[in-house]
Length: 241
Figure 1: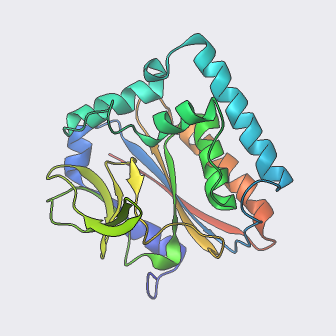
Figure 2: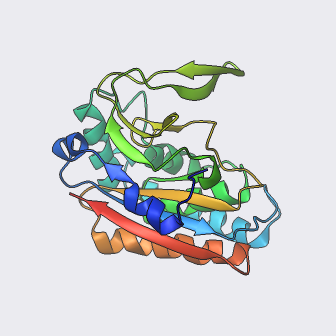
């Protein structure tokens, strides 16, 4: 848990390294800390979440009826960004591309918070990740990895510690990597669960997404999350070059 920090102080201390902006000067991130959550039942059966998922799946089908996923404007931008730090986008797809592909046939169902942010990601065509704020060790930082940072994940059903490639763009905190390859795979340590009461959400944008579109996605996310508790409060910060 970020000790002795309010959500606003936590957000003020979150950083994007200069080396990331050198790679993509058009990069922006909108960070939201949402407190007071009382998550709804996970899985199918929650009417509001089900309706949101249905909208997102329909939107994906509409998008893909006229174009291949890899040429959708924001997906294409993220493919280019991945190539910029040596990742192969056809092998490790950015989260927006992966979700849009899946949404055409049906989005995965994980828990209420994850299902909500996945749907908002597809609807607004913006990569979006969610983390358990209480499990963070200090503020979030987006950096180019040294290759020594630990990443807590699973392989073949077993818990393992991996390490990013040197130069890879990763989100991390004081304890290690929280998300590899910018927005490709999140770690287990800070993952959202049905018991999460305070969450950090990270919305990623490159051109042609505008600041207004990025903020609109944050507004949509905050509006839906407000239904998960009577005392929900949202702190937010936009970080850009």
